[in-house]
Image 1 (cartoon, protein in one colour):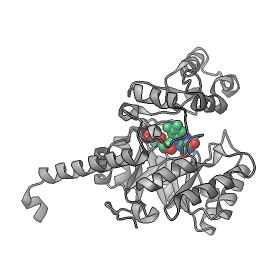
Image 2 (cartoon, helix red, strand yellow):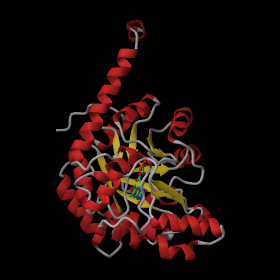
Image 3 (cartoon, protein in one colour):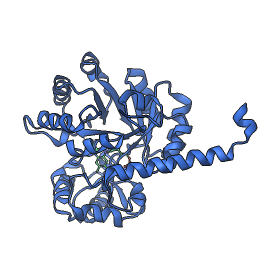
Length: 336
Ligand SMILES: Cc1cc2nc3c(=O)[nH]c(=O)nc-3n(C[C@H](O)[C@H](O)[C@H](O)COP(=O)(O)O)c2cc1C
């Protein structure tokens, strides 16, 4: 039995102890990862795009179900138009629905065309966007929950590059459906701040990359522990696909190529940015090459630890933040 400490639309929907969503991580969020999330009292999402060979996504979902037991997990489907055809996306959703998955995290484009497949299967849809204007659109087309992930984030911050604190205020003002806030979130204090602004929870990616259960080479995790909030680089804006990654040889090369020729185009960048290069870095621990998504909360990834320990630390931080707020509030205000 999970005893909820926080009671929000997110904890109620997913049945988690904490209102924390571990967003999909290309090549990294597999069954072991989402099971570690589930055991720690949060929900994680397997990235469908990491399991492209026939039968492998089904097998990973089965593995996650066995490992999670009655605890929740979901599947992330990135729909970046440049990466996947609409029909492939629809097929993935049909497969997920057929497997009885209950929770989906979508990102990368307007999910409207695919919502009937998901709704008919009774799947709960969390759609992730980079700024408030897309969140308003997502609400209008009928997603269940929207996550706004700001410029600080690892991976794709979108083109607007709006910071998380501003997203938070705009979401509170403009949205009616439950929303999550992400991008640079890595502590319980930040989580309480987001909840105070009306969020139903937070999305984390970078902070959880140093979880022991994440299937990546120890050298990769050591590099993340070593890195600070200053060690990310933004590239790929020239092809309207901005990405924040760990600063390394590849990001420097791509930045240089884009500066030299702003019309360079994706074909010329592909030999550097291909996902298979990044995958190799996760396997070998040599982080000098590959586009390795990572956000500014690299400043908070100070040790490799079991997921449960990372989450317990965030929970303790949240407790301290709540106590701090309580201490700052006068008895009169509490009675009012
Ligand atoms: C290594 C890595 C891989 C990611 N891959 C995906 C992905 O495949 N699909 C997706 O929707 N988001 C992806 N993201 C974004 C995360 O799910 C999450 O939204 C983001 O990391 C939150 O911001 P933060 O990194 O500041 O915590 C990735 C992020 C990282 C760090």
